[in-house]
Image (tube, rainbow, N blue to C red; front, side, top):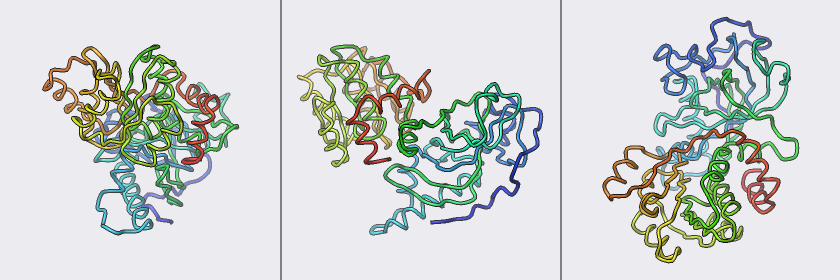
Length: 370
């Protein structure tokens, strides 16, 4: 499937360097001027020149976050429509968003994703100018919601992995993290892992031996990594409970054997989820809940299953701070509400190492995303 974007970059080859680049990217904010690029309504995606500190990339694949991709799939859906219609709608939504905002920043979910690309040009003042070569393949570890992006063509849409193969360009600011693509696994597999790389390292910080943990959306990308890391850190004395609404993913989770119990339930039904989790945990609430769902309205399930003074960790981009904060207050739950940070020191290396260490998890990711 191919679509043309209105803002096709026309200038190829080395771009002239313009002074005035700021490490956090405020120099590319168009509306409002001077804003940080993530909350900005529109950013400058004119790559006929690059600013000091920038890294120019040729974009090969967009890995859209799960909440955003699902929203685009469902917006305007028609009963009985075919695969081509869904792919066409997602393509149109992405091109519309990038055309209007200069970045893939979903106006409904507020989220983006990340990308795989090749180095076209480095500003000479970058600290990595001597270690990163033109042509090297890298994955960005910052959100597409803050990454200036231009797309000339969408070549394919892969719904299972929420990925789009494209022709386009992007820039990474001096403060933006990236990972060099590993040479021991396929690009699509590595990209799927790096998309949720921040999840597992933070689970490693939170889970102690003997802990009880509930993972909502445990059968998806981040959910599987969270459950696997919780099992590694918690050891045999921990109790890991996975909640997954999609039957095939729930079945995959059972086969992995990393959960003590797998509950097939909709996280948007907090009372039913609480009842099922307590039944699977000896009548007790859990020490830690991890929300990795791709739908809105799951905040209260994470809160209701967590014990007083426990932790509810929201890694899902569909999370509403208002619903979580006011909801916890409304049911008199004194739990720590933690907003998941997509960045953790060493997160790319940590999550890629999991693919090397956990053969069954890698096999599942390769089947789905590789």
